[in-house]
Image (cartoon, rainbow, N blue to C red; front, side):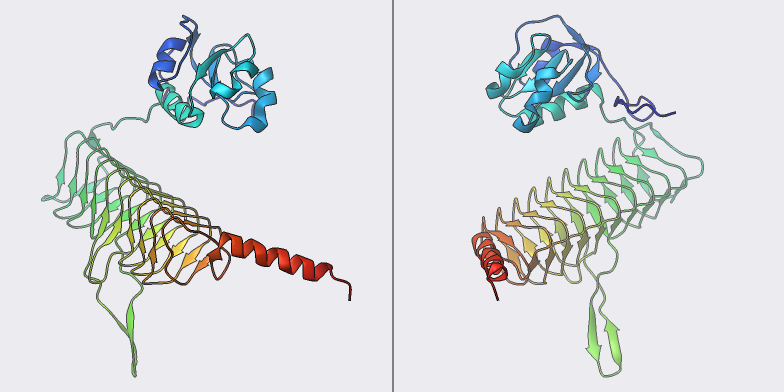
Length: 342
């Protein structure tokens, strides 16, 4: 019988601690009254106990804050007066960031268990750092390089010449070819990196495949969601900029270049040779035509269809994508037309 009350399951997540409130606050640079109260874990407001820490980042849930049994709560200064007397407020102007740091304190990522599983294949001229972990049935091909403290999951294939930087995590069944990975790159299960892109010439005799001679460059701190695909470049490199986050089921075409800290939500498709500058955000199921430039800080709404260049900081919605105010004006006009009597 399953217990519906949420708690972090020790079968799946490593645990550290306990820590007193002052130590917890220090991790997130929070402000807290000096206290020796000991906390042993994290939990949501509605189920947290006196030995657990919780957080509030959305004022819509203030009623849960007032009733919480948590021993400490991470809150914005504006919500301190809603914290019950039984809980110690840990004050910060960025509660969600604070929660991320505290949750990682109690439940750190598992470190690599150095060694190569006996069922794994490692080519004789591949280089695997002795601090790396190579999982069951993984395949490390010729001249590949796996850096320090990497965790390579079961059934992963790392192709010839691929470089995997330090502290990377590669999920099970991922495949990597024609690629260079920076430090702390995370690929979730089933990711495909470096395969040939969708490029061909149309001839009288039929389609002629164009050789793809580029690479994929994943810069430091990139994270790629499960079953996403990143094609290698045709005559230049496909680049995912440092700190970028791609959700599950994202398709990145050949020669695409993402800047720093871009966010791409699930089921987005970006066609070949399109460039996204730094800090672009793209909503789920949006699509972009090829050879476009999306300006720095632009935001593309869910299911938008982008067919032309986008200026910096623009906010686009709809298909074809258009500025937000124009989109809502058209929606309002259509609603008025529908309401008009015949």
